[in-house]
Amino acid sequence: MKIITSVAEMQEWSSAERSAGNSVGFVPTMGALHEGHAKLFSESVTRNQRTVVSIFVNSLQFDDASDLEAYPRQLEQDCVIAERENVHVLFVPNHKEMYPDGFTSIISTGSIASHMEGLHRPGHFDGVATVVVKLLNAVAPTVSYFGEKDFQQVAVIRQVVRDLNIPCEIASVTTVRDKSGLALSSRNMRLTAEHLGQAPQIFILLSQIAEQCRTHETSSAAMKNRFNTELPAVTAATVEYVEIVDSNTLRPAQIATNGTTICVAVWFGDVRLIDNVSI
Ligand code: AMP
Image (cartoon, rainbow, N blue to C red; front, side):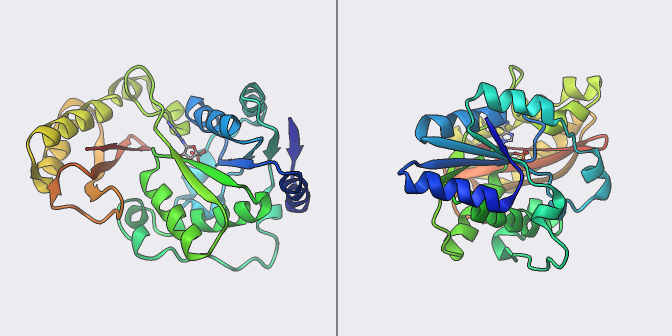
């Protein structure tokens, strides 16, 4: 596995591969890799001749300085996972390489990013969109892979790629969960043992609500209310938001029915977890 740290070298490598007729799959990450990331890598490796994974903790997308500070960094372990998955290139630019002195251009993501994560993490999606466009310009992939765990993020990236005519396919990959149903996340390692034991209740409750909606069409308000009352009744979690949205447009849905998705963000102590289940 080759490690590349400069944008110029990344562009050169990719241009040579594309000229040789190889498709390039790309998975952007912030590191602290787990089996959720690995599934994205293996999708890319299966479907493309070459796979590039980037590791870059993007300060621009953190609205909370302490969250950025606490974000896990473990490059050595990450290399082991990427090698195991047969990734060809690990692209690891540093902050200065991505945001050199004089950098000022930020993408404005608009209405698709105005609720849920976008509302509760001001500036988050502008930061995500900006770094993803920069990474796509560096890697110039044929296709880029994103996890459905970050449901709104996939929609924002699709919108940006369409709006800015970026010649790259966007593919989404289903959420990888542990045996208890908890969505794998780099943030799980910061949960206390007690909270780790309770966190699977997020998916258990979401699945129960989705099942109820599949069999009896019901109002979104009633289902949001159920999540808001039942999760804190069985765990120490605080619900930041629960929204039921059209799975394609992400517009809030009045009725929780087929074609909608329940999206939540909850706090366990100072750890914020997100998850979603489609109905
Ligand atoms: P991150 O390093 O958290 O920015 O995530 C990098 C990519 O991995 C994003 O596209 C995430 O949606 C995806 N991802 C993170 N956790 C999971 C998971 N449990 N299952 C599938 N994809 C995931």
